[in-house]
Image (cartoon, rainbow, N blue to C red; front, side):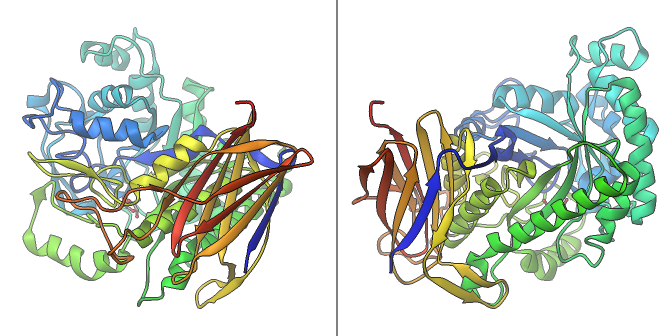
Length: 510
Ligand code: AHR
């Protein structure tokens, strides 16, 4: 049966923010050390940044990168990472049972962000620290000069202020695993007072208050209500974190993870609206999905964390280096489509993480770097989604999933930008191809190209990319046709089983 998808170029959900394609670098495992930074590596530049990894990051195309954590940040002292590298302290990182050398810190991150052409998003420690340290790091980063902290930055080599605009008020403070975990009231008060003090220094900041670490948290909902009651007047975004995995071979549910993310976003949006109305506040608060990805959390909880504890305190241990499959890439593609469908509420999103740690890019110490399967949907979406996200009507077969109820066989999103259109399609049918007819009114377009991520010939949906071989790549989708009709366009495509596809259309005269 054919799936029919209708769109009209004038019927838009909202503008696609570039920040939707953000990423995340945490001092965790090998995300920084032997990930983005490895002095002595044959590809390292004079600052120790791996050029091979930087090239892959630029190709991936993240717009904004969150740093330095994650759980790490809740026990971190930012001052440890500035000044002469040989005088920086070596410390325990209790969050990841690791040893932190502090050879990479604020200045290195800002230089790396410039080299990678990404906007920095800085997370503050509201676990063990508070208002004073937040004010200090802000003054250090953004004040031009003439004060002790800003002069210290200049003496440390950054004459001009970093001008960091985006700040996270702590990380996952609802989680009992978080260092300095707080109740919603405790955190809400601290976040509000931190925000107030920071705005006294720099009123132009964008502040992200921490929402829930997952929709399964018992406090989800009540946490947001309480925290927003304290902070709504003072913040611009509230975060949510969302990780998905295949449980007990239930592939159908895993492939429908976007339905769960969709519900999580809409529920959070409802709480924002309710709180703003109760407080009679006429403003917008965006949702910052500032950690999302596929992550085999059960393996981390059941196996890796025990191994980490048994191996003792080490620098840059190998942790959560998930090797992604075709199925994971398709799920990541559909999560990106879900973010695109929610641009009326989602102001930014950060895939967690960037290199080695549940990441699209992998690298070996002293060795190669390569693209994981999930690299490809991110790159294609970041490069193709432009302008406005279109409201779509999808009519076609649906499947029943144990975890998410009924979902469309084909999950869809589309964007339009001055005569160009990109259509993102996930075929959730694992064993059969699905025909799709996409009709867009108000634009006469032709097909520019069509790329799909599906199971490579001769392999299974469990195929992965490794240092030695990368069989999972986007391939051109053959047989896609485009026809004009009364100022509109109909595209017909046959989507391979279990696949994520992007169709790119351009103006007929283009
Ligand atoms: O991204 C890995 C971890 O997941 C982060 O440190 C934490 O914020 C989340 O629980």
